[in-house]
Every structure is written in C-alpha cells, then in structure tokens.
Length: 171
Image (cartoon, rainbow, N blue to C red; front, side, top):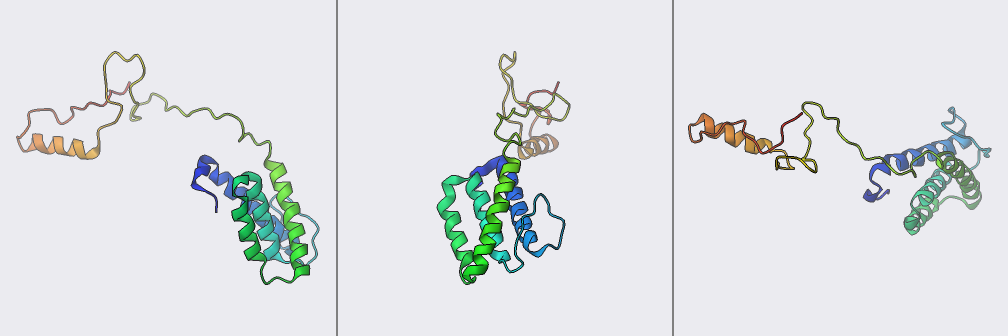
C-alpha cells in the first residue's frame, strides 16, 4: 500500500503503479495497446510475477523507505509460481518498471510547489490578512452557529441581526 503521508503525490504513485502492472502483463499477453511501453516477453512468463515485480520496483523507486514491506509482498505473490515462469515474469516486471520510472523522472513533481491562493471573488471565504485594519476571525462561522442566531432572532430571544458574524466581509 501507499502510505497516507504521500499526500498530493498519492494519485501519481497509484497511476505509475497501475501503468507498470498493466504494461508488464500486456507485454506477456499482448492483448491491448500498451499504455506506455512494451518489452519482449515469452508467453510462458508468469503474468502474476510480472505485475508483482513491476509494482514492487515502482513503489521502491518512489518510496524507498518502505522497501522491506514491498519485498515481503513480492515474496508472497511469487509463492507457488514455478521458478522458470517466475524468473521470466520478474524480468519483464523489472524492465517495465524501469521504463515507467524513467518516463516520469522529470515530470516536474520534484519542483517546489507554488501554494494555491483563492482569488478574491464573492463566495470564497478569505481569512484575515497581515496588516488588516480590522481584527477579524480567521475561521468562518459554522452553519450551526448561524442557525442558532437565526433561531434566536426568529423566536424573539435576541435582538442581534442573524447576519451578524465575526467573519470578514468579502471584497
């Protein structure tokens, strides 16, 4: 598995993993157009070994700290496959994984990421900025607190406007 600490890169890791597995199996079965690459493979090679090795190599390339976990998963997937078929599948998986890792090596994900800033448009809540002339809450009012204020005004228990809020005005 890919750890939750992968954050925004998690989808990239899953995509690379699945592309490598697909192209490894497809290199043996030759049923579909390759997604990215095809390597020569004997039809006697194990597709299970090819997919497992491709997955292991891609994940180790992306998350080397978890190599022991991926090695154990690979060993479990190779159990019960005849040594000759497994060796052929392993070779296919290794070759495809290397090509996928090389393909994505310079895709820009290692570059520093620019933080996303919401544009100042109506309906997009903005926290208080440094140097703001009025002290404002940095947390928008919850729907529950707005509901209770509206209920209090409607029942006559409050004279405060139901629209009164500590949230900053937009604009």
